[in-house]
Image (cartoon, rainbow over all chains, first blue to last red; front, top):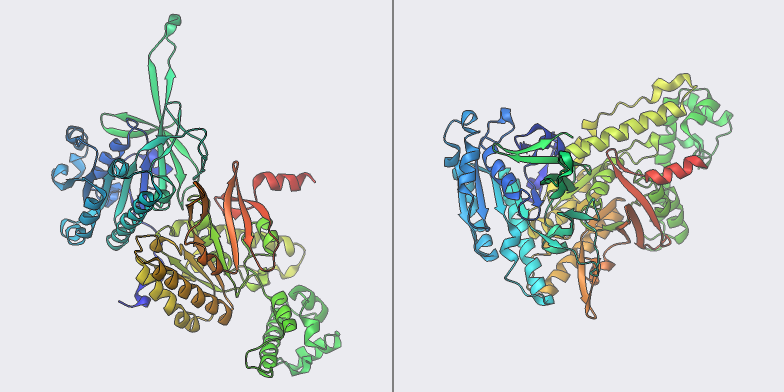
Length: 280
Length: 350
């Protein structure tokens, strides 16, 4: 290997992208999740991170004509249990476009700890090419790190150096094999008195009426290329006759930062057939 | 230096002298269109003459260097002359250019730091495009090396910025030559694809590769003399993973910094290093600071910090030997880095 081998000239004209299998969401992301980089989806629980992940695991198998990568996908999950029934339900909508049973080409691996993830990633190279994997989903990165570290400077340093190791490994594999890498992240509440560091397009992220920000802090934010944020707004629907109606949740997705996307957002709903953008 | 020594045709020489352009210095501050008018020749021809003249005066500078006491030494006066004549790379945001004294300077290492999403990569891509602006439009007409350590360089985005850059040049063209019949002469024959072809893109996946490519740059640039800007996005990423031996890290970074400084000087090119920010624990509290530690802050000539001021993006000159510390707002738009919308409105109102 020589330094001149790292030169890529001329540049490819297009980055390949993985569809979200919804034209509106694809439009928001200019075609989908780009390959070769790490995309983070951050949201509080119950907004739809895992729904997005499951949808992508299936979409990766779609043929290129439908915006997929016609490849297998790998899901590393740290939030238990894995929603296999929901995955099965979703897969029924993909069967007609995919030659084999879609569930056969989704590989699932539970994660126990950050070191376990790192160990797994270092053994992944041969597996990726053997199984023709083009998508890795980690759901979620925050759950791995939540309990293991104390809030002391030394521990935080150890934690952030693990972030960079994991991210660097993922980026290496992403660019070597043309993988799309999607990492979900949880959010934490923002306490007013604490220093307010703005990262990305919005200084003020709200979900369910609470001020939140993606978990794992500034050093992890340096490790991802694209950050998407999902949030929920609750609305009381007034019924006729002045009765107090149901609480209706509306869901939104927004680009917090991305090298190729402007600040934009879109409403979405979760239906039986998956996550769908809404034009309102 | 007399005009008569220039390698141009006799008729051109005659026209020059009869119009009063007898010395090389008289040609140094004249625009191609003015020269064309004075000599009653086409603008292209005028441009050719100016190019020959500027090449000759560059040679003069090196000649003077040779008779200095120590080989390669220059007097401060020569250096000042050289710096004043050097072209800077515009950032496409005039407010930012103003505080930078016209843009990013060649022969210097400029570090740009800020939080994720503030626009470091955007500025990096913008500069890789802007360094290619032709000399007729006040650019360097150079090529760029882009060293991507994070995977954030997006071809689509570079294409978009290149398209906007061409549009701006066209607009400038039609504005400048509104009543000239010679408008065909300087038509832009550039395509966004050409801009992308002039970016040498290296994708780096480890710090070993990063050091190897930086060592190789000298050879690469000497083979590609038209490279005028090197962007490293980011210098930091691979150096933040678990370096047990921090002294080794400092040594590696120090060596890299020296190489880059030397490269900038020898090949007269601008080096732009993008850096991340981190929190620093001191006196019981966490503070925001650029990554890689205190010794790294000596590695660059200029240091620009990008930050949020409310809803506005701002750039602050944190370190510079020649510019005073100042801040300016900028915006990241679909067309690239530009002035803040609110600011340009203010200008229009005046």
